[in-house]
Length: 193
Image (cartoon, rainbow, N blue to C red):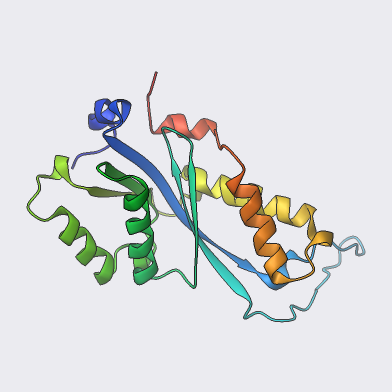
């Protein structure tokens, strides 16, 4: 298998773009802020409408630190393929390596069919899209988890401004889209001078 270590020259030359990818979900009820309660007692806040939910696909380019954010209805095979196509549209003529977790829809029939289609007839080193997995049950390996955390913390700090779920989504997206993410764990994957 052609991993990152064996392809560092392609990354440095800009021929191969390496993305770490993840999904997150915002719920309207989990963005109401903080409450005070008695020490040692659990405070429960009823969620008004659990159906108001937004899924985001996100990918961090490990070389340029650019972040691609795409809202979708849910995390599934169709939306995963749609996100891979978006990454290709943004990076025409580039080979992509996507590192992601082992969630079921990353390996479903639709995703496998799409990868077979775009890589058909190519040697592995020439694939247009190569997918690698993080270790199982190891979200701390994925820098995108840190992006989600920063975005959600920003949203929580500004809960008083967010009167509607649309405000919540705007707050989250605007914060993430205005950031350059430069986490030390990016160096775990790339050794670019």
